[in-house]
Length: 416
Image 1: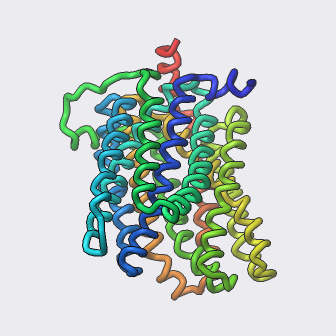
Image 2 (image 1 turned 120 degrees about the vertical axis):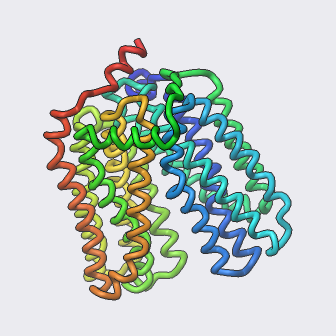
């Protein structure tokens, strides 16, 4: 098979990471979809269900800096194995849940799972560049994004079926099995494995990661772009629901359908990145993807002036996920390729915390924005933020490329 003889999938270590990621993320989506439904069935309370969503978000905001330090201080492959084992064990307390009085156990387990996932992600993305050639890093990120959307479609749909068919024990068994299968694929060593010497406190290590961002033009340029992307995403999460309900006259099922079909575009985008990655520098990939994403988003919002046909919007949202995934791959690749291996985990985690914090700000501001300037204008503001982020990325491309030190070349030499 040609796709196994060249590109990221030609590297056995990346293949194992890629397959294990699909298995593990499928289990994650089963869990994430099933838990809010289970809480609502258990309590009949919308407030309790919302709380379950909230406890899933908070660990990412609070623990990203610590997760980045751990990703650089510990062996990354072993960290991923250890986290997966801990996630498997953390599911067990849910077997004791019998009624609404134990819903706090569900929330604690959800928070622990989210916290462990926060440690897992920077370790995975910091390890990835050591598994492929430098020119294959963007394509590798595109394939990882493709995996995420495949896992979302598979895990989310199967999770609802398993919960209906076998209840909570079935979800726990399936999710636990996914962790264990992923661990089996990670047991054999691969990549450039190194431990960062523990010669400083965690706080000093975190500050060193911040200095890495400050000292590299390629990373400094990412801060504002990432913040604008997060703000736009936070606005989207709220405004999307209002748009479907008020502008399109849809209901809960329509909202779920339109969010779900975005994974189709996401899969197409992940495959497309593999084709574009060798032709377009990651900074340009990021910038142009955001500009295209902005135009497509604005066209989607303003199409409601012409029609509110739900099948029409299903088609629009099905393709809307493609530029979003390309932008993610460009952002991740640009970060990885302008960071030293020793600090990559901290830099990735710091930029992710900037994205998450900006996203939270967008969630908070969305309601106020609609109240002050009306929904159609608020939707256009959201699309404009994406355009601004893309134009800023493109404006920085020439300076970023000129200032880059290409630290991944050292990894290529170490690999050979």
